[in-house]
Image (cartoon, rainbow, N blue to C red; front, side):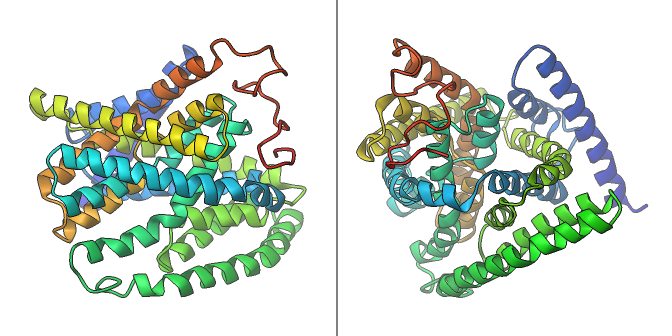
Length: 414
């Protein structure tokens, strides 16, 4: 075994041990293990006790966790539900992104960033963390509530904007129109190719999985499910789109199968373990070794991100006809920066648009804002539910709101 393989094997063993011990300890006490995993990642990572160093393999496994998470989300939806949510995806999602981007551009500029860099970082920080939000809402049983669906609509819109933002970074940096590799000009055909791929997949995947389920051994069915999620995810990546979006479309393609619950059972163990790696990897990025003065600045940046996005999110929700209780809970759920913020800021730094020290500050602030997400969601829940009307008479502000409550679309919510 060569040195690289040995190092990866050692890191994998340490991460699995951390996931098992932290998750068991937190769940035994009734706590959400995400914060524990982030803290554990910070402790054992390159800025803590340095038991694990930076590794592209770990980042790759983290990305797989997000892909499997979105695959399961697509599996739980249907085309009718997506149609019902389209108003929120393209109305609330766009408004939220625009307001948050503008507010955060102002925040970054106030911290001393030049205007072009502030625009790039502000837009990047407007992205929220799909993994953190969906995991917290699932743990709290709030995915099917009104604010849960609106939060997911915002996240889905942001996933659609990732390739556009990446294409715009070289333009802001003064590069060629559409970037050095023509990425921006390829966006329209990429989306069209992904649409065609999705329609073909919708026809073939049901036939493929039905055949595997009926004729193959039990161990072949999970393999086929994992293959489908990965194939669609990496196909989207090759087209310049978000891999998690491709995995989501794969789940959506088979969401109407009567045996979709078997698919969920087959892939859930992979998703839970790999997503736990993602939370550990987030902890790796927390700069514990920085001087305490720098840590205070990072904490200030994180709080500024949360405050700006929470306030902008409430305004966006109210502007789209969302009640104030749902507005508070929706905006709190997506108030953190996200994993794609790292990608966009790193791309801006690589194009010399953002200074290296500025990129480090805001990536660190983004990480801390993600770690504070469960606390912020719990706080918003208490605030929104304070003084609420008796169950069934109010606006369904709490997690026990019926899944079929009116969703502002004139139809029953999914």
